[in-house]
Length: 248
Image (cartoon, rainbow, N blue to C red; front, side, top):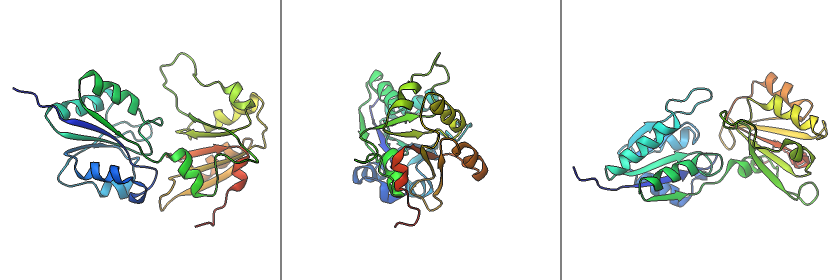
């Protein structure tokens, strides 16, 4: 049987609804023959996927993955080798803790043409939606974006928590809800002031967006009391003083 090469598109859908899709993302999605998706793009984007495409839910819900990463990549390559236009659809940007880099490597290893379609990252857009700039001349001349959920197979953390605690910039954490108590405790242990402002923004830029505001000393308890759940963006630093819940 002759093998026909298709193409893979690693597409970032942005952090919210269809309005946060780039023009290129919309074009690629509408022309797709196969779409591998999880829940992170949100209901509005998922409901707009073309019915003519083969839609494959690859899961990645909190603590429950429908398919393992290697299975997702196998599906992606298999369909591309059938000559299909394959979209791997992700929330935010595919290269911001989205495992897009791993999927790009896999495509290259198999000689599959691939296009990366960048998306608006939640690390910047979600704080902005509630009036929090991640940089500000008064509070922060740098911003560090980290994952709150490192690869569990690592022998030790790749994050320098001591340096991070002593830095004066903004810290933005993605996928950090589960480990929020440990994160706050670690930053305080290494010297970050307990009164440092913290914002946890759930389901950013969606109709049911919600914010929980506190300090490093109080945020874990407040988040637990509020029943905070992923997906959420955590912002730590003086810029949280800019937070406003009532701005359009």
